[in-house]
Length: 223
Image (cartoon, rainbow, N blue to C red; front, side, top):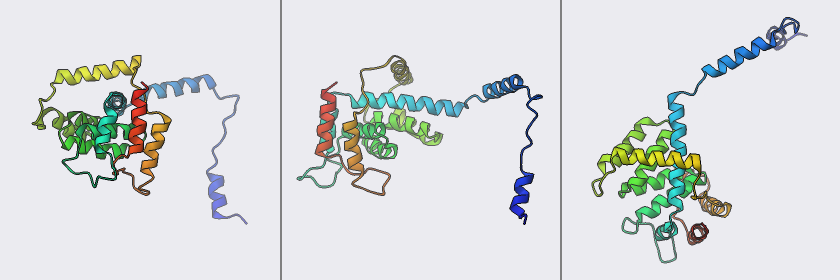
């Protein structure tokens, strides 16, 4: 018995062209022309470039000699309670955010960058600007760019020439390489261990611990 599904499937069959009349060369030319017309949009290109720049900046921050020292200042310990405003080390939150980003935890990185930017870190504001550009979130990206260049009153804002120079540097590093290394597998494992302490959550709000700081010290010392 023929069912309605059988009928629909038979009617949906695509007729096969006679191979003797099918022009393979012409089909390939049409395919190549169609592909060339599908250039990435300006938004996609901008997002990709922002992601590359953010990766360069994060490696740069993570490879600073005192990176582990700053992260150690916000690390939990037996004599420490919840992280307070007085205990906040701005550079420590920035470095920890960069580490989280480079080890595949961008939402967690955003959380810690926001803490650092809220405490006056222009570098964290720049990371957030690039992060939101990566996500195609232009309004938020503009907000953090404004914070970077205007709204933070405690320090002198960078001018347009400085930011352009930073982006030129990022492009140079991306093209020619750098001594700034990516996190090691052991350092990634420490981050994953910390993430596992809050199952079901997409954001690592827990403070870094002494084991992670020790691994970061080994990482920076081995450069």
